[in-house]
Image (cartoon, rainbow, N blue to C red):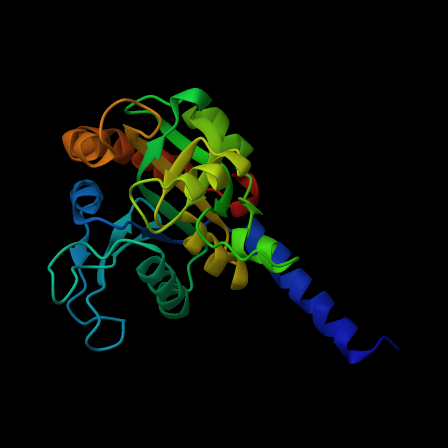
Length: 265
């Protein structure tokens, strides 16, 4: 007779295998900025959840509805209660990802957003990338093993059929909590072999991996980090136009997912 622990592991593996064969039903889309979220809210004809599934007092916003055969949830971390700006960055991203998984039990997470790109790695303004790997570049812990924990490099969930259909660019994503890039960050980003950098992706990946939910990462380039224009200026200049490209790609991805199982992506 097999030990109880072995039977439990086998049962979990069977459940995961069965889940991967069922058509995707519920998707959570994590988006950091309202400007990025609202066009998709309109596209999918979602409504804001006024009876929030989230804890009382948090600014997090859920838009939800049925699109084709999919239950779509767009989660936006909302505005900072004091300063009134979008709640960007890894802390908000990890919190809303955890809370969304607990409350909504999604089959798939999509982290969609804008990002800086590196022309040295082939990125141009308006390019949309599907991240093949994610890592942090600003969690510096120069102690053996802790250093790798800080970087937290992960390969993302593979979606070969989706990639073939939608024909996005592919690149590695590096995440940190600063819009600009210090010399320390630059060295870490180069070490991560990143094509794009953002402020949320690796945090979403960490939580999704922790709770065993497949996640994909779609990033559209608003600014060229190794270019000759100030990052903040270029980001604001291109945000609206690049968001349109991002939203088009996300729509194509959701259309592709409709009716398919996780294993078919």
